[in-house]
Image (cartoon, rainbow, N blue to C red):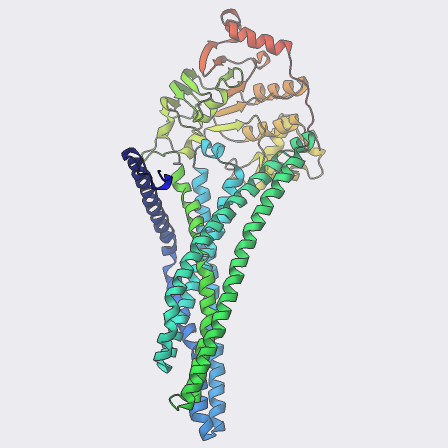
Length: 624
């Protein structure tokens, strides 16, 4: 009879097991190496505050040393002053002790102040650099990562680093210094008893290692739940209208409650571990104090120790367990802090920023000429893209890029502004390859009107002159320029009807304003920027015929001296473009003028017929 668990493994099974063990070993070594790199980067930031760290360490040493005054003063009073009944010296000793502890409190105050400012400055610097780095990443980074997850890295993970500095590093150094000084003081009083008590140290170390491992697992779970909470909130707030219409709020509420309950469960577990630590250390403290009292009493009876020595030793033991408790609690934050470091600094490795040239070149003239030469691009998910795209626009021309959804129209704009990077081919602006230009110089060439009418939570004036647009102008000059633009675009009547005029606030979603009004504000922003090229992504989408005519009139009258590239899913004959590029499945189907394309491009005629048969439905107002 064969026993299954004693069955001899075949050579193949042994090889598979060995290979799996080898793979896990390599993965563990890689993880350790990666963590070492992250630690090195973190310590690089810490190194910026060397003087402050040295000051903190000096204050910790002085504060811990002054904290030892009580046991030695107690021994001196009982063994030397009480037998002599010297009341005058007793008064002086007590006064000196008060002075020492006042100085101790002052040192601790400035020590805490330095630690707090150091940790806040450190995390502020890391958060600032991380945000700047993220703003240099290609658009695909933000498309592949949920907003809630990115917010979590800049909030929860960063605060875990702050906890690592304040609760782990600082508390551990302070309490270890205090523990070391108390052990030395206790050894000075009775070395034999101190050595006996030190036998529990290995067990304490093993317990701390196990605690760190467990708290690391809890920290990972809490981070995951925090990411899920922020992701649900981000989706719910951005899609509140959709949820209310289709009743998705109830289902999302159930999911949110489930995640909250799981988060609560992990937090309760962590709190109970901390409570268990306090109870365990409290029990050990009581047991050790009783043993010390028993031992001290015997030594006094045998006249081997004085009353002052026993009291001083008992005070040292009593003072020892608070820093031990604080140290054990602080070590539990190590894994949480390490996870915060890993989450934050992994961003610098996950995606590379768009590479800037070391030797930038600027065009000799800012005319607005654009040229695509055999440009290829493929999205990571394998959907859409561009295939061998080549075209050229002349300065001051209006160029319409037309095609159905997914044809690659928006990709042209994203590649032109280097929000994406092409895989092959070259793109030139005024005769210079855009890869040879600095991003800030390249993007200064463009003014953009987006399809989704992007606005920030600011005033109308702040939205018109958002970012670098008109940044050098004072508010009065900006207001005068805005009034002139509003008059030309026939928008001043609408702005005058608002309670606060140009100071009226606009939400990020533009709620409370019609699409036509928002589109005109976007056109004002585009016109206010001194840029030779204007990119317009579906500027007439979702507008009724009246608003569409007004928008087309603004484009034709106020952007005559600029190169204007317009994306549209349907032909716009009323726009009277100088050139039309017809895209289909990432490639150019045809290009030319409107009359020419009608005669020789069946696909263009099909798009035109679809636009004629099914005009855009009126969608004038999006008011709440």
